[in-house]
Length: 114
Length: 115
Image 1: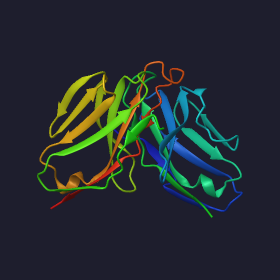
Image 2: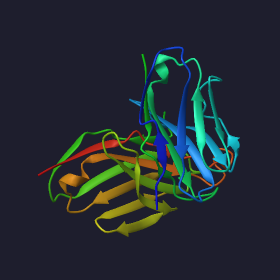
Image 3: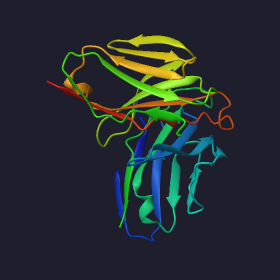
Image 4: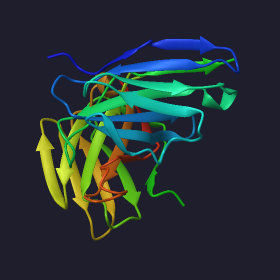
């Protein structure tokens, strides 16, 4: 079946603008995760969804970052008033359910803030 | 000190060599251990998934976990140029981080297999 998909694949934006990144998880996967991958920082957890609720938002770096999930499927990560330090690859992963299940990643969105 | 330490490499080996990749960690709550392979400008691809201590083999890949030493390894036998990628270790624990099962990653080891 289809894997995790993300759009756009690349996004260049000016400092101060808002951006929305989209994730379509694997069909039937109820758990969804957002991570950020920066040079020298590795992969960092941002937020986790179980269904449409987000029990853990502890990785969101500031209140400029928010995310939602609708219909237990598609998720959108929004970054308001982007800063240059937000430049990174934003990766989405999904897993079958909450618990120690394998997480499968999408190809990521490469965000560049100029 | 990071929770998960991984040598960034780069590691260069000739085709056919046995490759050993390693991570150490500090949090004894970790119980689930994964290895991901990431090609340039692609998302991480799950290679191996193990629970607690022991070995797991899948084709040319073997994952080992030693919880007493807080040390995990990935061995690649008969390495191929197509194995050239960044290898990321990741781990999580039941109930860790508020029962999120979020993954904590190493920074990745860049592997180059020379033909």
